[in-house]
Length: 386
Ligand code: FE2
Image (cartoon, rainbow, N blue to C red):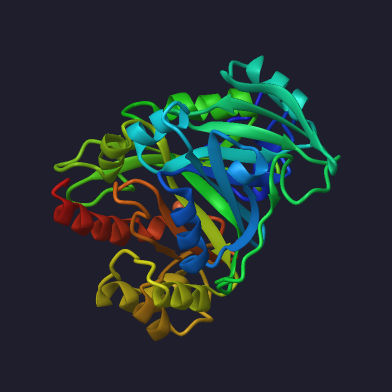
């Protein structure tokens, strides 16, 4: 049985203790988004976010029903996929949800075993273990459904040395905007419906062997108007972290409820990507037209030195520089973190990105929740959805 770990700020050693090892995960393999126009989305992620061309499949490679562009930045791989005709079921996903994350793929040693261990614990199958091969070797894939129509794929690639996956060809271009310093996926957050958070916490515990190592209730995460609850799930080695949010009652509509209305169900709310130099990354992103939530007020920045001193940490960055870029700071016993959130990256107020630089802290910016949500509420007000 998994040990119940329910306190705020447990370190990684506690995560190891509580997690089960029936599903060893090596890391995030890729994230696949279903989008209305993959060609244009790929251009956006390259031009604005600094992703690089990596692989492609489409009509030219014999893929008659869908097209996929793979873009890469350090360890982050995104697949942007669109259907090529009206009969492809990807259309139904896009009609219902708009552009959004379909697949969070996990890199595993054994995709067959991963599927067997999770389905026997109650996961609904998305894809039975399937071998795909080409002249570069073979990949074994399998998949299960998680919340909403979102899927976890298990990717076993130890016998493959091709560019990406069988079926894809290398994609090269003469147009190659510089990367902006994004390194790897820090965490990915799911929004689920009213009173469903604990169901999915149990699902990640029982089916995936994860542990709940941080919890926030609506008394911690609220503003004058709206609230939410969140629990952070992690696998045993701490490489995969999935916070799960549900809306909570407030005077006005929770941002989670707004997401659920527009995504028409549960789904991925944000992808948090790590950088070693958030000042450079955010400067570059802003220069390329990425829009961020509004900068917190002066009082917020005045309070930062005190918040760090409480935990005996010293801010290495210039606070005026952080303020001019709208970057937020949070601290705990182990260190501090710097973070900022983009506006939604499509017209529906659904998926957005977080840029995060960890300076020792392992939390998720709880000290920033209030400033962040006030900023989101200002946007909701403009959308008429508060
Ligand atoms: Fe986050």
